[in-house]
Length: 224
Image (cartoon, rainbow, N blue to C red; front, side):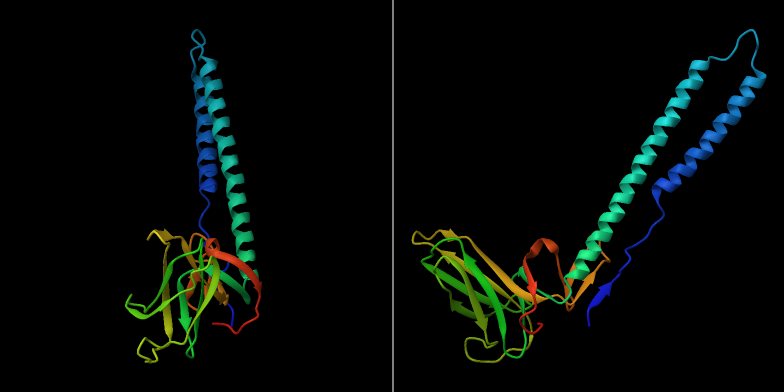
């Protein structure tokens, strides 16, 4: 079942609401003091009206700043709502993710890796959750994207337990220089998580950031 964690987003008391209340209280106090000063001023030495005008201008400036903050909060809320709606729209979709971790399930795990240019050699390492290398192989040296399917067996043929495994790909050119590589996995989004500062997508318990997604399409393979 699709999962929605924390939908509705964390709600906190608006700081601008607090600021508005404080400004109103201060302005009421200012008017009260002004009234008392005017009532009790010396007719032969009246109060300088310039000071009152300056204070009123300051109050006006603060009020404008608070209103700007209110508008900014509204934009942030709207953006968060739009992000949440977009995240929900990913549920059930198949995505290509810039990620080295893929699940091994029923003797099958799959990654894609790409080399930026032709390589003299490509080394593939599969590592378990503890970072231990459990399988080694040579990869395709041609430029472009290649698929790597692993049957879950180590180099002596032992079938390993289901779980998450990492793929590490390193490539060298004819001069022994590193060739740029990248690793991606294809997953099916099962939920969305709104508990953090930014929405994230879920594949089971794994969080997927929007920034790591390279492609989105309708589901064509069983969920993994």
